[in-house]
Image 1 (cartoon, rainbow, N blue to C red):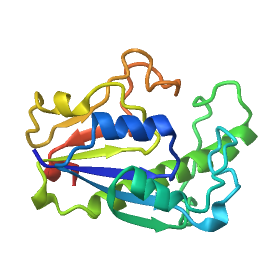
Image 2 (cartoon, rainbow, N blue to C red):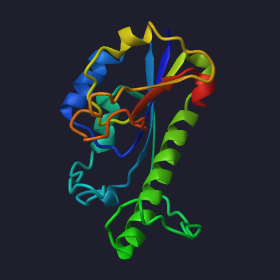
Image 3 (cartoon, one colour):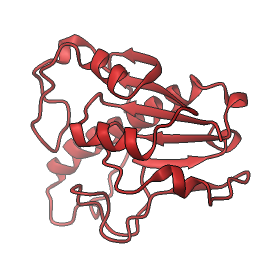
Length: 195
């Protein structure tokens, strides 16, 4: 079974992510493609709103390409987005928070989600879907707790079916995601469905 892996988003990872990717997902039948929002002007700057980690390695892209065996990698700086279409805010989203808080958070989250979707699409568009049986979309900062290669063998990748990781035990390891909620961290399907 030929597999294409689509990595996207921020070029941030940990040694455990790399080692478990290579032992539990990557194989000789796998090619990895990636799209990352990156420019060296981002070095030593915070790039996520919910923590203050900074990428301090100017060779981060070269290291990720090597560590994840990336076949093709595209990088580009963050793109400015027009969010002026937002005309109203649901203040029940964050109950008890001020209107000023909502006015600050809504554009940040809309920018984040739209950038995330664009990076996912850019990465998947790099893949020639006629060459693969499965496309897997993942972030580079995941820890793979199970052998994904053996799980894939038992799945039916019929058209219009996407498999998303289980969050039934409280979400992604260490991430605090709510239980039983689908999200963008890891999912897979046949090439026509994923495209």
